[in-house]
Amino acid sequence: MKEKTSLVRSLFSVLCSLLIVICSLSFLNCAGMATSAEEYFSIGMAYYDLGKYEDAEKWLNRARQADKTYTASQYNLGRIAFGRQRYDEAVKIFEGILKKDPDNITGLRAAAYTRIRMGDIDAAQKHYARLLELVPESSDDGYNHALVLFAMERYGEAEEILAKYPFAMQENKDIQLLYARSQGRQNKVEAIESFSKWLSVNSDSKARYEYGQVLEHHEFYARALEEYRKAHTDIASNSVDPPKHDIRFAIARVLLIAEAESSAGVTEMQEAVNDGFKNIEAIEELIGRAKVSNANKNGLRTIADNLHREKFAAEEGERRRLEEEQRKLDEQAAEESETNPEADS
Image 1 (cartoon, rainbow, N blue to C red):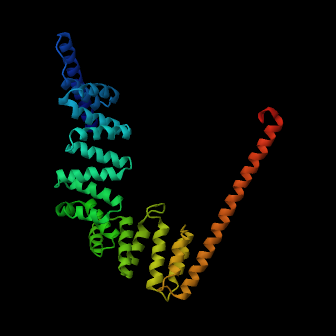
Image 2 (image 1 turned 90 degrees about the horizontal axis):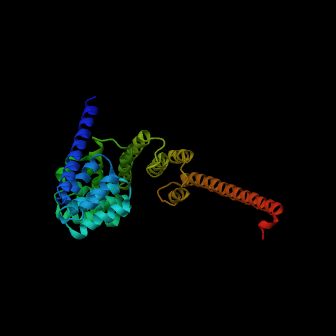
Image 3 (image 1 turned 90 degrees about the vertical axis):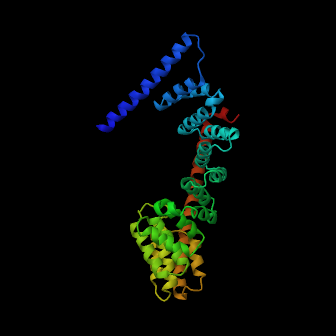
C-alpha cells in the first residue's frame, strides 16, 4: 500500500512539474518572449519521466539545437532509443556526443554498454579502456571492461585489470568470481585458491564445474572428482551451460585417468552417453591417452562405435525424410501441371 501511495505521489509530482513548465512556456509565448532551450529540455524530461517517449523526443530534439542543452538532450534521446531497442540509433547518438566531447564519461559508459548489446565487443572494449584512463579508480568500470576482455578471450588482460581493485574484490563477489575465472581460463594454479575462496561463501554449479576443471588440469584428481560430483548433483537437469551430461563426462574422464585399473570410468562414460553426451571426438581423444588402460580403451571404443552407428542411422533417416518430402513435392507439381496446363507455359 505504501509503495502504491509513493508511486501515485511521484506521478503526481511529475505531472505538476510538466504542467508548471507548459504553463510557463505558454505565458512566455503570449508575452512575446523567446522560449529557451532549457525550457524545452525541462518539458522533454518531464515527458520522459512519464514514459511518454514520443513527446519527450519531440521536445528534446528542440532543446538540443542549443549548445547549453545539446549534450544532455542527446544523451536522453540516446536513452530513449536504447530503451526502445533501437540500438543502432542509440549508439550513433552516444558516439556523436563523444565526437564533440571525447572525455565525456557518461557518454563513454552509455556507448560501451550499447555496443555490448549490439554484440560489438571490440568497440565496447575501446570505450572501457578510455573510461579507465579517465577514472582509473572506478571498480565498476574496471569490472565491465574485464567482462568485455573475458568475452574476447583476453583472459590475462582481464585478470590484470581486476587485480587493480583489491578492496573492491574483497567486497564484490562478481569481481571475485570473474577474477577466478580469468585465472582459470589461463590454467593458472592461483585459480585454485581464488575459486576455493569464492565457493566457501557462495554457491554456483557452473563455477564449481570450472573449479573442477582447474583442479583436474593440475592433477588434483581426488579434489576434482569431489567438485564435479557436487556440481552434477546441484546443477539443474535442463542446464545448457554446462549441460549436465558434460559434467558426467568430466567425472568419467578423471576416473579413467586416476583409477586406470577400474572400469568405473567406462561405466560413467556410458551413463554420460545415456544422458545425452554425443561428442564422439572427445571420447576418441581419451582412447589415445597413454594414461588410460587398454581394457578401458576397449570399453570406450565400443561406446564410440555405438555412437557412430547412431549418428549414421540418424543421418540416413534424415536423408530419407528429405527424399520423401521432395517426392511428394514433385508429385504435387505434376498433378498441378496436369490440371492446369497453362501453368507450365
